[in-house]
Image (cartoon, rainbow, N blue to C red; front, side, top):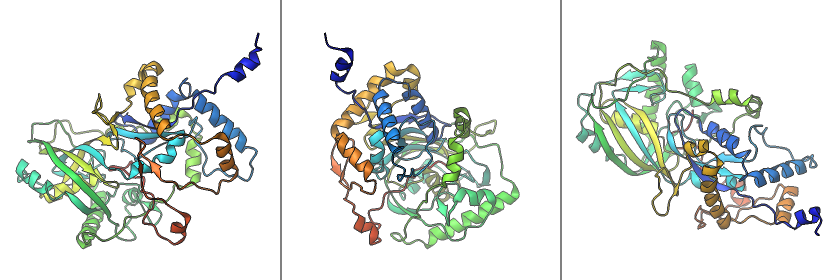
Length: 434
């Protein structure tokens, strides 16, 4: 009879599943809260038990390497490494790409891919955030807006162009976020830098006459002082836009958040963190907006802001425009369509998560197993050697979700020489969380 401890040693090691998948984000949640919700479901699951065990082993090994410093204070709610490939506003729903374990190293591949959105633009007013989550700061007549006018102006929004980010965004100017300037009523130290974006599809799906829809304005109006400040900021953005040459200029670079602020938030209890990342719609007017609206499908490049598009389209139509809803229906090979068309992969839904591991486990397992086959892990001794030599980095070309090679190789020389043509894309989606 074989001793029990020898029988245990003879068993093959448990399969570690990691990689990239997508979840369908519900409204009102921040992208960061979605990751915490996923960790809550995954931490006690059988599917991710091997990954959790390896994570604990790696952390224990790091304790014996005093010279290796952590880059950040990890959120204690995160059982293992996880990240997302492109932020969505709390108002937005749809595809949020998630990386688990080794998959987090491949998320940059999804930042530069094209994305498809469906948005509703409500004409007649604008808010300080360019969507219905903000305060109304300006309004204009809509009597001249028709379906034909909207379609004719939309035709101008295709191809490569420059776009000014919304004032309420997390982009930094001289180390300070734009929405901090807006909230504090401070003038920008310099003009906003535009971003080169590309729209490959701009289609009118449905046009709503006044009184034929249920989209509503926020009930809160900005104060006169707030309106004056925002009007000044909008004028500055318009002046910058008029001065932009069609193919000139570079976007601004986001700097990393300060560790001290993150460290404080990481130590909060789970329910307190969740409260900070749940943003319900503000109080709305009691009746639907007496204004036209348009449902539009957009296929766009990285760095595109749907909120800025809504504002720009309103201006082009002789009024104002505000984003009333937003769905990211596709990003790379992931889609919200159920079932997914051939060649695409459906997102995991919150309904799947609430139904339990018996439901979401098989769906997620098949996606991650396929990813692991396309991106085999290195031998344990190779990983341990890299841990002992943290200064080394692997610049081999990446593979996409389907295993195809793509992207240019990078080397240290390109960074030393100041060549930023291959720089990693910014972690900003079409409507970044503010």
